[in-house]
Length: 116
Length: 115
Image (tube, rainbow over all chains, first blue to last red; front, side, top):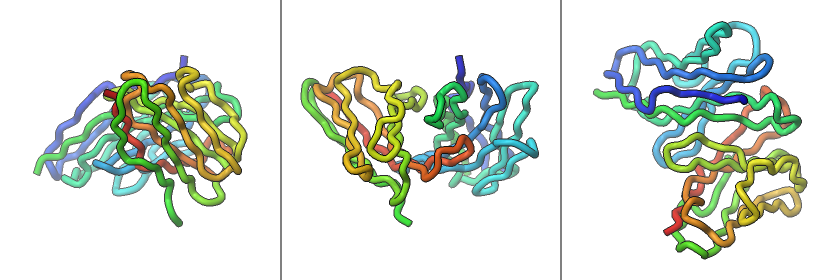
């Protein structure tokens, strides 16, 4: 069955330090991978996606993610965390068995807390 | 352009009552999706409209949930009668094209609390 795993419910990091939010996936075929972020009282906002090409994908707000096919991972990273990065982060993969729907399979989310 | 708008932002009802959630997608977006996040769990797909037609409703939990998209514009999701396990955040998303690489634009969500 296709799935996305975010093994950490919460990640704590000090401002200015690098951050990593982990994501692993299980799908048939080549994956289409996405990261979304939810700030308090806001909707899900798209951060970045991997479809094909360079394994290192750059996105909004200085975030990047590295696609690793052998480890089936798509970890989200940022070189220097900001307090304003504190939010709930969701990893998602396109359901490749979903026909023409283009629906997404999401992970359970990881709460990122950046301390000043 | 205006984003995806959802109403109400929060609804508190008692078990057995009815609630209707509304979603206004981005103008011109034929594809409209409903998702739900039950507390602490993953965001799960409910259904997908292409214009006014239901393309996929495989994620709808049971027949207490009814989604409509009359005229292919806004959509409503009605829960009748509501149960405690229906509590969660209901997200609506839209996209213009139906491509695997296409990004969905989400609304802020409607939080439903069933007491």
